[in-house]
Each structure stands twice: as C-alpha cells, then as structure tokens.
Length: 202
Image 1: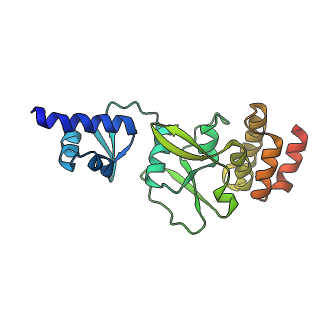
Image 2 (image 1 turned 120 degrees about the vertical axis):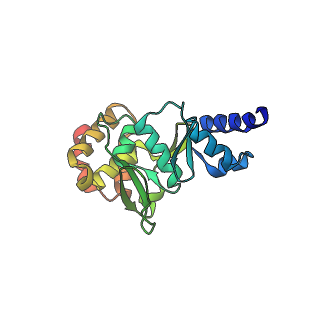
C-alpha cells in the first residue's frame, strides 16, 4: 500500500503545483496513467479534458481557471479583449467567454467551454504581450495599452462603449501612457478612431 501511495502523493503534489497538469507532465515525473485513473475514481483528481487534470482540492476561480486552461489547450494563443480587460482590472464586467487571439492562418482551436476567437497578423499579433501567473500557469495576455487598442480595432465585437471605458480606466489607473496607447493605435490601425478620445483625455 505504501508503494502505491507514493506515486499518488507525487501526482497530487504535481497537480497542485501546476494548477492544470497534462498527462505528459505526470509521465515525466514517473507517474503512470494507471495512478491517474485511480485518483480520478477516488475523487482526488479531476479530468478536465483530454490529457488535462487538476487536483480536486485546488481552489478554483472560474474566470481565471478558464484562462489558464485555454493557454494549456492553445499554447500559441493570446488572451485578449474582454478577458484581458478583466485580467488587468480594467472592467467590472465578467466575460461569458474566454477571448483568444490567434494567428491569421492558425486553425480555430477546440475548447470545451465558451470562447470567442479573433485573428491578427504581423505586429498586431506579435507585440504588446505580457506574462501573468494564473493558477500556477504562465498565461500570455495582451498588455493594457494593446488591449485598449484591440478593443477599438474589434469594436464591432465588444462595443465602442467598452473600448472608451477601457481607455478611460487605463489612463486613470495609470496602466499605460498616452504614448503607449498611441503606438498600439498605430499598430492596430485605429489612430483616426482613437485620436479624439485621447485628445479629450489629455
């Protein structure tokens, strides 16, 4: 019994440390699929999806949890728009879906929970990123200035009112400068749209 408990304990410790762990993470630690199945049957481990596990006693915050799980499933994606606004505390609204930005030619990912995908290319996709730790997972999210510019670029998706509010909050909370916002407005090709709002808030 002692021999069996050691891999189980290591598996739970790994799951708690990673937040969301893949089958290959367990295998790299010398833990077989057999133990994962047993732990799931015992209710100690939760199978989130194909090859994704989480400790049952791991404290879950649904919005943050979905962001972390999305990055596990789509490692090349970037959390953006409403989800990024929430991550930066630039909105009081809780998105009903995870907003994800992918490359122009990338395949639309399969995610087992509500999500919305937008595409970008060039600097509009590769710049304005930052890393945040959510549930022990390193999540790539657009930085505050890029997020605001994206909201104006994809205003048909999120609404112009959301974009304007995000711009005001971003400046009020000093999470970006006018210069940074103007730079990303140029990259996202929305300078003519953002200019009057930036001038009014200068």
